[in-house]
Amino acid sequence: MSDSAATNKTTYREAIREGLREALCSDSRVFLMGEDVGHYGGCFAVSRGLLEEFGAERVRDTPLAESAFVGAGIGAALGGMRPIVEIMTVNFSLLALDQIMNTAATLLHMSGGQFNVPIVIRMATGGGKQLAAQHSHSLEGWYAHIPGLTILTPATMEDARHMLGAALREPDPVLIFENQTLYPLEGDSPEPASNFDITRAAVRRPGRDATLVTYGAGLHKSLAAAETLAAEGVDVEVLDLRVLRPLDDATIIESIGKTHRALVVDDGWRSGGISAEIAARIMEQAFFELDAPVARLCGAEVPMPYSKHLELAALPQPETIAETVRKLVNKHG
Image 1 (cartoon, rainbow, N blue to C red):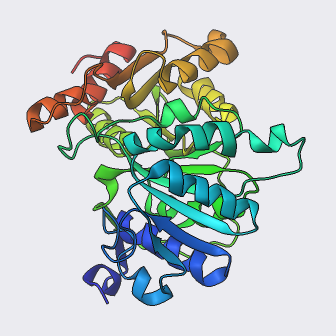
Image 2 (tube, rainbow, N blue to C red):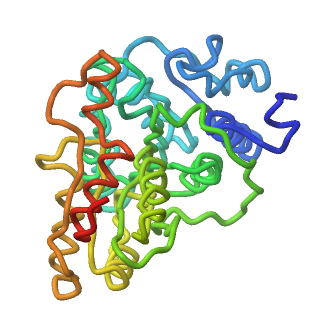
């Protein structure tokens, strides 16, 4: 037993592993496949020990060929299995984009409703680990653009553990984006959950002066900024989107109705990103509730630097979030 388990604590990494274990135990149709998920235990050690526990039929190492093994997962889903396909980092998913967008996302439509594709695809996303320009993308907003996909972004221990099981119960493709900076994050071990929601956003911190709309690693940076601002008398509500497609408009608009100001925090690039979609929906649905224009704080529009101080500067941080909120509410600290 790990130290974290002994103290009823866990890490984000371990919570995902427990979700994988529960899925493999509960349904013989479920199997995990991807690069290094078996003998190596996963690039981020998420699947460590599962090969020994479940065997090579259920935990399958694949060649370095994303288009091939994502395609194989789609075929397995069509054949009645419930595959969990792991793509090492989000940039590698582009090698399987044809399979994801032109097959998994469209087959139900193209078959006239005859063929569902119940596949779950997991991948690490985001910057902050000094993996430089090739392995630090935040492309979940790109995938949220595609009809036929559900896009999940777990940021808490509970979501890390339980979103997977809920995704496996969906009849159509679900992509889960796990921010790589969250894997070592520690927290309370989640309780079991039989019916877990993957449709709604969640208010992680109630407030009255402004709403921070965010997801993934942005949640924790936004919560830290909210604590700083609270000491200055600025009460910020923090909204964790959890699901990027379909967006939970109702919860977003309800929060704006309370605070009348919004800042969207997104590690992804600003131009054409998910932050623009969220801002547009707020303007369309809650324009007369706003006391200030919707603000956005996004990743710098550059290839991600390797240098640590430049990487930090390229991403929203608690300090820059707090400063942007100060300007938004006209309270400068």
